[in-house]
Length: 141
Image (cartoon, rainbow, N blue to C red):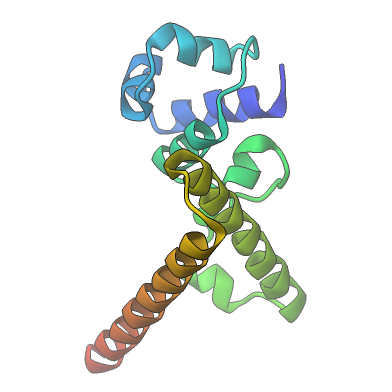
């Protein structure tokens, strides 16, 4: 059994989900999902991204490329990171975002220019939300 299969099953069980429920969320039949979890088949990249999203994890963690589920890290944990840990987190999140963008590019047949424009929009939205959250945090002591 691959790390992907093991983590898929582990994360699904942690969420107390059935195979059918998760299969429905990512738009495949249960047999297909079961084959992924048993290591008999591997999903396409866009389905891996959907699985990671539904299981609140990163693609890298789900695939076994990282042993840290970065989305399971609290704000307090992040604030206590060393510079090296923060750099590692930042790099891992960028890799995860690039994987997601690559899956979207293939799925929606986007050009490189369209993909770059999408990245800019996502970054602008992130910065806007971060600024709004900081304002809300400072006004609610």
